[in-house]
Amino acid sequence: MPGLESLKIIKNWTEKTRTREENWDEIANKTTSWASKIVNYLKQIGLDLNGNTYDFNGDGRATQTTSIVSRLTTLEATLNTIGVRNIGLNLAQTDRIATYASDATNLSTANPGVVTFNSTTNPGRVISRNVTANQSLVLTGCHWGFDTDGDLTDVPLWILLLDTGSGTILGVTAQGGRQTIAAADTDTAVGNITSIEKVLVSSAPAATYAATYLGWIKADFDDTGNAGGENFWTLQSAVGDVNIGYVQTLQYGEVLF
Image 1 (cartoon, helix red, strand yellow):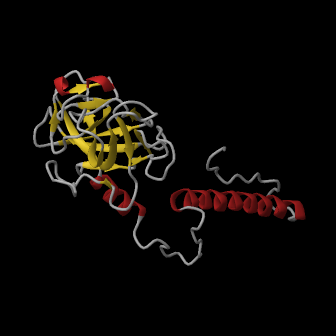
Image 2 (image 1 turned 30 degrees about the vertical axis):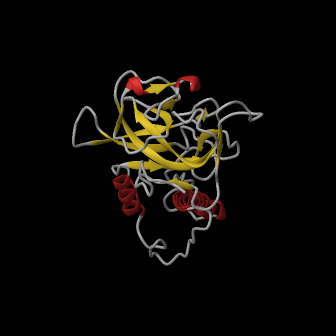
Image 3 (image 1 turned 60 degrees about the vertical axis):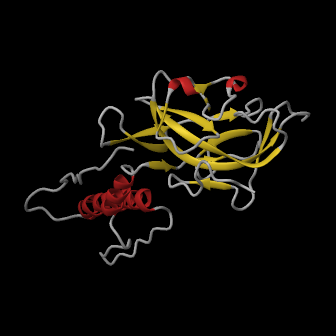
């Protein structure tokens, strides 16, 4: 696109000469062409900002109930609130914790999730990180101390993200409610997730990191004999089985019947 152009009219007549049709055409055609381009540029801006349903009503008054600047200010303010935005759980495979964008599209640099943490380097402040790729953690083999206890139903698992200082690490644990996670309590190998405080992570933390919770999900635990493997987990998805949100509606230590 050439961008906004200036109106250019070439004078093809001289002083004290009779004006001919081609003289008028030079003015009229150039003005009409320029005006058409300007109208299309303005339409492009309006549609890019407001979407294809935007109404160009021509009355010179705002169509939107609140201005774009006001909406951006509100959006920027929400980025400074502890929590997770535009990240959801993909439950297509029920043996793993998998994330994607909240509308079921893939996370990417053009469609990032945002996680806001309590800052570890500047206490009392918060910091936001973008999540630009889907992640997943297969649960089969983890037991969080439930091994040999028999089959269990509706076990709550907490999904969290850790702040590395530049990015995030996905984690899942059977013990929620922690503000930070120590490196010693994490592991990338399912066979090492053998006690309640352990956190299965997508990559190993280098230190104690701040945690922000995506939410929790209930899962059934098959202790032994499942065709999918020993210590097999099946995520549940009935109403009330999944909670996405930083404000937890289920606290660690509650007894489920």
